[in-house]
Amino acid sequence: MLEKLQNDALELLKSLIVTQSFSKEEDPTANLLISWLEARGIEVKRDLHNVWAVNKHFDESKPTILLNSHHDTVKPNAAYTRDPFEAKIEDGKLYGLGSNDAGGCLVGLIATFVYFYEQENLKYNFVLAATAEEEISGENGIAYMQPILPKIDFAIVGEPTLLDLAIAEKGLVVFDGKVTGTPGHAAHIPNDKNPVFMALKDLNWFNTFEYPKISDSLGKVKMTVSQINAGKQHNVVPSGLNFVVDCRVTDAYTNQEIAEIIQENTDCEVTPRSLRLNSSFIDPNHEFVKAGLKLGKKTYGSPTLSDQCRLTCQSVKLGPGDSLRSHSADEFIYVQEVKDGVQFYIDILSEII
Image (cartoon, rainbow, N blue to C red; front, side, top):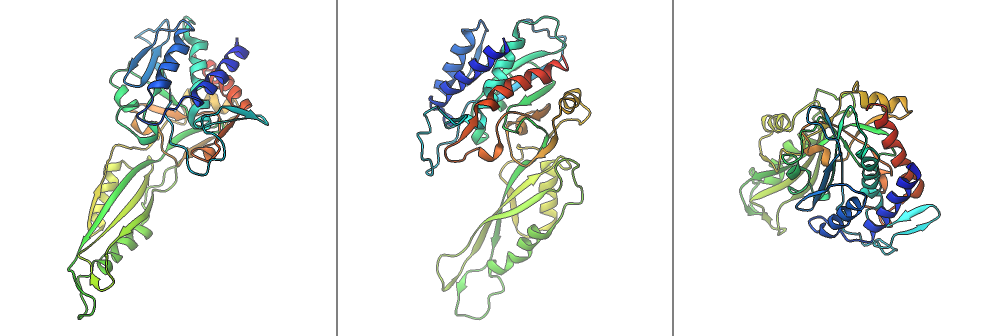
């Protein structure tokens, strides 16, 4: 059965690659996934472009594991030399848009769900959710589905991790900074309300401040001033300056706490765009983490954002493929990685159920 599931997963991934599924345009892949699951006798539900199912012997008295990954993709970048929608295998590599991020993970979790679907007397229930809009942190993906799905006790989020366990993930807050000064002619006497100079103190604070609490798995909070804009003419002191700060938040702080610390330490107007993309973690002593370590895997903290940030339960990010290939030109995943993903998902869950 395992070998068949591995081959079926590979063929499903090929079908997903050739089916365009940009964020907000996932209807074709949603239909594909429903057909694939129904052909295997699984009762499937759909909400918007999200496809989900529960195991055949679902028991509300038992805790529930969510198997989640996304079926949307980014748009191919201009550096592609291949057709991004051609699922072609060369030298053991399956090329195609979404193959690595996160197609290999998605089909691995789907195959794993099929493996456990009809089994009785499991310690946990399983919920499978193939969700939309992950690549844009949209509101109609996993965030939309959480109130609809059964209560989840623990989640596996399928993203490429080389099958190591990302037991924590940094959150993200983007801040918009605004400095208001006094406009004037550049040739006149010095203007002590020049917003360019007024901003220097706060910009330097963002560059040098270190948050005192350091996460065991994610390290330090990192703030980066990534954009700045002021003025349109060389001879006019601008009336204002705008800048953007990218802040990667660890599990040592909430996003709200970060916003409050920034406001306490800066003079300019600083506004968070959103506080909803929180850091994620799982207890290092959770039985799933222990199972991964037993099977020879490493644990680490992930600097990249995924749908974990929208979940309210403990979660781990885990999957075949390499995060460094995500969103790259001529994206690929090794065929063996896809097969190993199916094997490992089944093996690690078999340790705890």
